[in-house]
Length: 112
Length: 115
Image 1: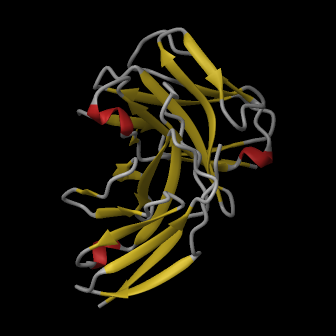
Image 2 (image 1 turned 135 degrees about the horizontal axis):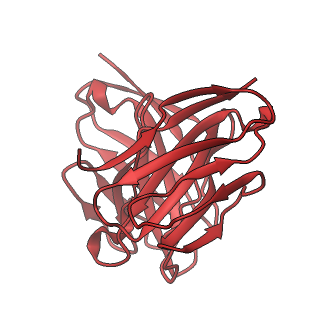
């Protein structure tokens, strides 16, 4: 499975945009890019996913580099509730199991 | 309650004892997963199941046994618990196809301590 690299931690101020980077230089053409987050003392929750094009949903936006070797999760207005560990994960398109291989993630702190 | 639940939420046991962690989902999702989360390791996949009576190993299956006689339940058993199995255990499920097939739904976790 291809690996991802994320910064260990980031800080943001409340109500400001946050850009969480992820490098995946060994990504293959069949790998989806997934983002999950884990709030304190909870299980992970799905945030967004994409393959080649940028994606938007109610939680966030995902910007994917043209060469697909990196991506950025964008939280448009951070709130205190967005403080969590954010995981960038690659999932093989052809894999029916949908197995997720979690890395260390980025711990996001949001300051009031 | 709708969703995915785990029981117990907290468990303390002793080395050598058998422990079973329960996972129940109400969506009739085909796929179910067990992960463990330890400090410094993130989440690691233990076992997964594609359907009732179909299970397969993940990254760290040693010391664990699973079964899936019903679609909605996926128990995880530690046959002889060891201290290294002290961890937080998460169960998850997902649909096999369609748009939401990309999304895994996680339970609240079971914190297991082996003394």
